[in-house]
Length: 135
Image 1: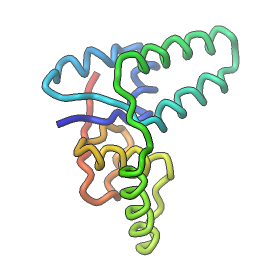
Image 2: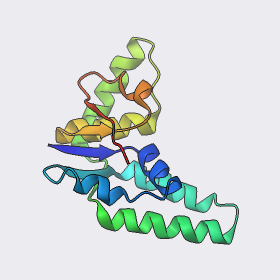
Image 3: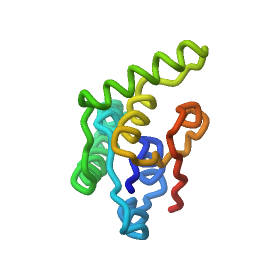
Image 4: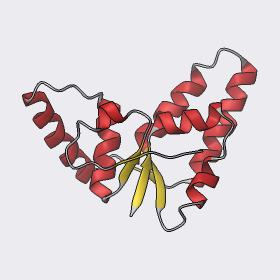
């Protein structure tokens, strides 16, 4: 079993100056990883930093996260799941942000859960297991 870390979990860990690796280490039987979309979101935060000091701090954090965890790409199997979910949710009039839906699709393609603080978005994705981490 594995866990895809949602971007919000990573941002909260940075804000709290928590060691995300320690949380993963407490569950050593599981693989923790990231969707490539989360990497893009974290890098977006680096570029939006309002000072050089904050940019350097964010850059160091993002590079550490990238080194610590495997990154799962948006490949054809994720794209197929994403398209089906997107279509199904749209037919039912349910909105889920594209990035969250890609993260959820990545987790589903791997048989993983998603660790998030944004349960409201992910609970709309049928079959997706949601995991709440504690720091």
